[in-house]
Image (tube, rainbow, N blue to C red):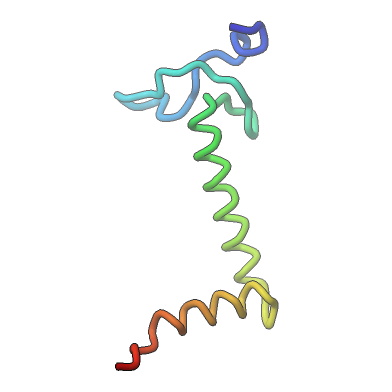
Length: 80
C-alpha cells in the first residue's frame, strides 16, 4: 500500500450506514476519499448529471436533436 493511499484512509461511500464500503481509498473527489470501483461509479453519476444539466439549457443543439430522433424511433410502430 502506498503512502498516499494510507493518507486517504477508507473509502467513504456509505460510511454513515450499516454497510460502508470496506475498501481503501485511492483517490479523492471533491474532498471525499473513494476506492477505485466507487470512484468510477461516482464519475458516471457526475457525467450523467452534467449531461442532464447541459441538455436542459440546450435548444436546437445536436445532442438534443439526436436524443429526440432516438426517442421517436422507439415510439414508432414497426411495419409489417
